[in-house]
Image (cartoon, rainbow, N blue to C red; front, side, top):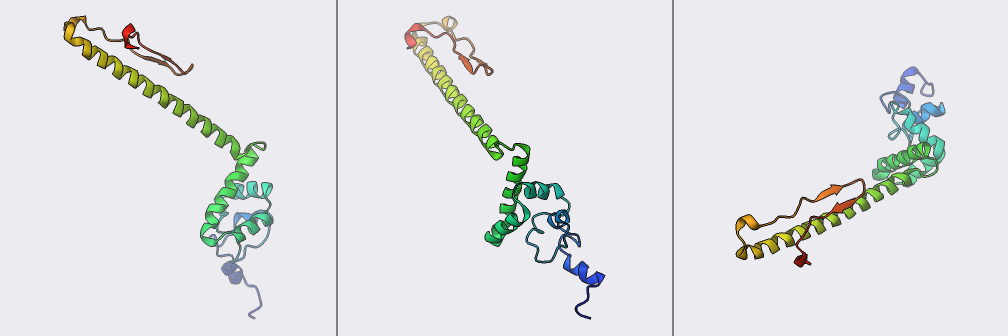
Length: 168
């Protein structure tokens, strides 16, 4: 009776994911075989991950894409597919592009802030150097230090201290 399907044979054939069907096979209501291409990447404990992927790409397309990817890169490809699908479900118009645009905006904002800070440091160093050069002719109680620099990050404005007129 080698051709019969006993309970132990079914268990051995579906021993991927601890004897349970993967999320893909469970959602598609089919038996999960040992050579199921989707089983390693869509664990039975994360059914919503496959639901998003299936809704956006379709199960057969995802299986075909994973078969064309080298085996050592399939986990990363499945993660990328799942991420893109999830973001498409959440934001059908922009998907992952919305996150990329937001991060690029934050990078641009941080770069601008860095330029402003470097300019502030340069101005402060020049002011200190000017004061040190003037120290020889003045007593220590006559030195005038510039006012504090204040940042207003909401307006992205930099309020500079009052500098001596001969500095520039």
